[in-house]
Every structure is written in C-alpha cells, then in structure tokens.
Length: 528
Image 1 (spheres, rainbow, N blue to C red):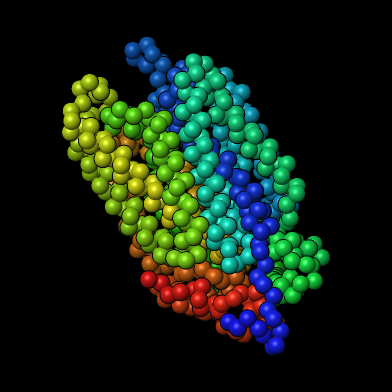
Image 2: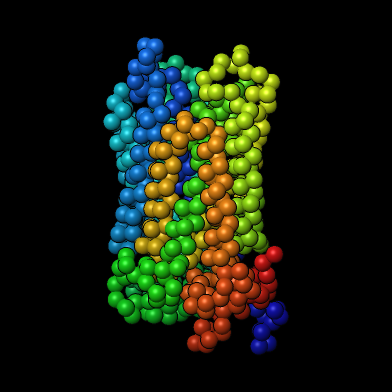
C-alpha cells in the first residue's frame, strides 16, 4: 500500500505495547499449567504416599492407580464445571470482574490442598475447588485476550497464553525436583502451596487492567470503551483508529443484539453458522486432549520408572517441561505466518509418528512393569531410551502446534453475542476430556502398557482429517470478519485465500487502510 493516501501521510501503526503487556500479565494464569504439572511429582513423593496412600499387601503404604486417578482427575472435574460457570459471570460482571471472582475461588482451593494432613477427601475437595477457578480462568483468559488484542497480533497474544501455561508446567517440575528429597510434608506442601502466590498476584494485578472494549460497548458504556481502546493501542482517545474500531464494533453489536438475549441453544443455531463454529471449537479441544501429551505430563514420572531409565523421573519431567517451553516459542511466530490450519495439520503428522513409534518400541522392548533395574537387559534399556526420546519429540511438536492453536482458534471464532458461552463450551470440552484421560489413563496403561500410545496415534490421524475438512483459516481477520468468512460458505481447504468483501466497510473506512503498511492479501498468504 502506498505510504500516502489522499495527499496525506499515513500515520505509523500503533505500537501495541500496552496490549502486549496486558496479554503477558493476564496470561499469568500459567497457574493452570503449574497445577497440572505439580501433582505428577507429588504422586511419587514418599511423604505424600504415606499420607494419602493405603496399606499394601507387604505392609508398606502405596498409592494405587485408582487413588492416583482420583487425586489427579478431581481437578479436571472442577475445571469442567468452572469453564461453564464463567459464562454466567463473564456477561454479568464483565471479563475483568470474572477474573477476580474465579481467582479467589482458585486460591481457596489451593489453601485447602496445602492444609491437608492425611485426608484424601480433603485434598481431592481442594483440587476440585481449585479446578473450578482453573476451568473458569482457562475460558476467560482467551476470551479477554481475543477481545482486547489488535487483530494483527491477536494470534501471537493468544499463543503467549499457552506459552505461560507451559512455563508453569516447567516451573512445577523444577520445584518438584528441588523439594522431592525433603523428608517431611514440605516436599509436597511447598510446590502445592506456591500456587497461592500466583493467585494473589493475579487477584491484585487485575484491578489495574482495562475491561474488554467489546464487553463495554455491549453494555452501552461507550466512553469507557473508547478510553480502553486508546490505551490498548497506545494512541489518543480521539485518534481515527479509535473512532473506526468503535464504529465497527457498534455495527456488529447492534446486528448481534437484534435477536434479544442469547441462549446456550443459540450456540448451535444456523445463524452465522454458529453450530459449525461451536462444534469446531469443541472438536479441536477434544482432539487436543487426546493427542497424548497430557499422559506424559500427568503420569510421566510413574510411566518412565517402568521404562528402566537410569535418569531420575523428576529429571525426565524437568527435561519434558523445558522442551515444552522451547517448543512453544516458535509458535509465537508460526501462528501468524503459517496460520492455524497449517499448524494443526503439521502437528498432527509429527505427533502421530512419535506416538506409533514410541508405542510399538515400548511394547516390544520394555521389561514388565516392576522389573528390578539389575535385571534389565541391554535391549530393555535401549527400548526405554528410545521411548523417552520420542516422548520428548512428541511433547516438542505438541507445544509448537496443537498446544496453542486450539486456544487461539477458540478465542477468535465467535461473535460477541455468544462469545462467552461458546468459549465456555470449548473450554468445558477440553476439561471433561482432560478429566476422562486423567481418570482412565493409568488404568488403561496398567493393562496394555505403552500400547496406550496407539490410541493417541489413532486420534491424531482423525485430527488431521477433521482439520483438513472442517477448520477454516482465520489468520489476519478481525473477529467481525470471521462472521463473514463462515457465512460465505468457502471450503476450509480454500479458506487461506479468502478475502472479506468491502461492503462490510461501506459505512466507514477500514482501520487497516490507515495503519497497516500492506494489503490484507499479504498477511493471508495461500496455504502451502
């Protein structure tokens, strides 16, 4: 595009510095990832087993697979309820108010867990209550970021949310590694109790962040919305960019509100193809949970012990956490260059290869579970090393592609009218399958061992097919332009070349014409 328009010099694009800082803080919800990761190390700590296990046949305390699954999965059960519950608070109290409410709930749940003495009931209740907060925040954070981030960096900002979840996982593994040798309850109370810090920081900091402009406009609070748009984009309140964004959003909101108050059933209506958009959001979250990576996150410590490796399971988990962080960093760039579809398709292929190789190698080379290390053969050890190597490659691929992309897609696919409810359904889908996986995976693995990875292989093959035929590319589109994409009926495999029509903007000039230095077509390149 020319650097001048109508004889006037085009103003430079906004820096978006405040939007980036906002997204970094709001994604401080890496407490989600921390809580997922920290429990896997606690499950094999002697003091934790002594307090919450049961007497075995040999007179020693053991933490059976059923107790492991209950302790682990109750968090996920709470997250399912919380993800749906946030839809009620997000529209009533705003995105900002909801974050405060559910952060308090999460913090209370952590306090209950940390104070547990020997009651498995208390620690599981604490994990359920904390899960309510985690599930709600897991839906609100992408909702908030999707509504506040400028469209040209929206994907990157949503990936940043996933990156900080992975940082939370990595941090939990480091803390477990540092405390597991302590010979008392501090070994697990310290890593669990540290989550109180994350909750308190989020509660206190959110007071200083702006409310979602889309929510404010939907509530008729236009002046506040203009101030927040200006603040987020680092421009003056009377800047043309602010006026254009407000006008565009108001047009979309008026159109959305014509039908009265939105219901849950409307998320599956034919209007604007909402049924397809909600289904896509739920399916991507379902497939993401059955990629296989959470099996390593939750039960990697216990699973790798049976692989015969000489490395400490805590060291292995820390390595996996570090690999996850490194793998997510490229996604910050790839999500806006490769796009959503290409990221998902590539990730499905790479992870499927890792799953089938690790599953077959593990099945044919590993010794039976419980075999003393002194009795392991050279073939057993090689098989264990190979399984761990492909587990690392699997986690790396997941972190780059299927970890962040479904959350990005969920945060940018719905109109304001049903956004909170549709995102709630997607998040709830994520957590119900997270719960089912964490509850049944140890039981399945106890029966078939590494062959459980072939189940994940089958799901990844299904995921590739589903993405190819059902998921359109939405990179570079505003949240309002996504409506037009779905209404156009373009085939998903042709969607990377789709362009919004100009009629959507006849009532005012497009903000991108003033602030982007290149045409839309250059940032929605054809799919490779």
